[in-house]
Amino acid sequence: MNVELVYESHSLTEDNERGHATGWLDGRLSETGRLLAAELGERRRNDGIDAVFVSDLGRAVETAEIALGGTEIPIFRESRLRECNYGSLNGAALTRLDAEGPQGLDNGYPNGESWRQAVARVNGFLAELVRARSGERVLVIGHMSAWYALECIAREAPLDEVFAIPMKWREGWFYALDERSVAEATPSRSS
Image (cartoon, rainbow, N blue to C red; front, top):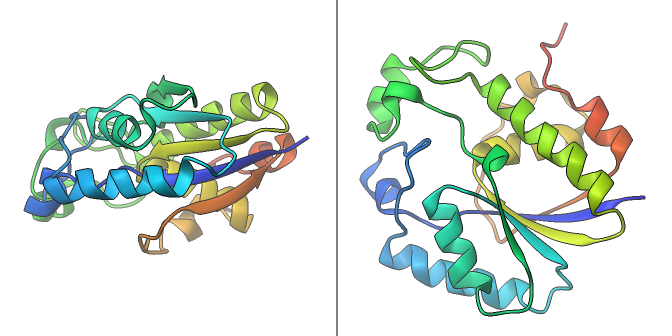
């Protein structure tokens, strides 16, 4: 059986507008971000969503609560959907993150994690989701780490290839997940 998954990134934050990488900090939605979260709710409220799974970081929770709080759709917080942990660079300016952060997928940020570790964490959640929510349509609200994991599955491509593809924001991505596709998308190094 499959899980039909709709992915939406958390809404625009104050950090996004300032050019900062929030990482594992909660962050807050900007005024524009709150408006975009309300639009997400309009898109998804009557979209056949059975459940929402959201990163437990504040900006993603705030997005979900504005979008679908007060509806009958259950919202579940999930720590494995967090963004990559930038460690001592959480909250740093993007220019600093680019200059001082690791080069490549396997080198962790200082006192943080690597992108491959972050995607493996998300994949663990996706594997459980497929088993627990078979036949359902779910919404995931998360970060780049979730998008990378889902794109690896959809493209049947290693993380090394997907990581080179720029994410262009849009109103949702759609994925069909099954146990085989998730199992084959482990973020091991490509040969």
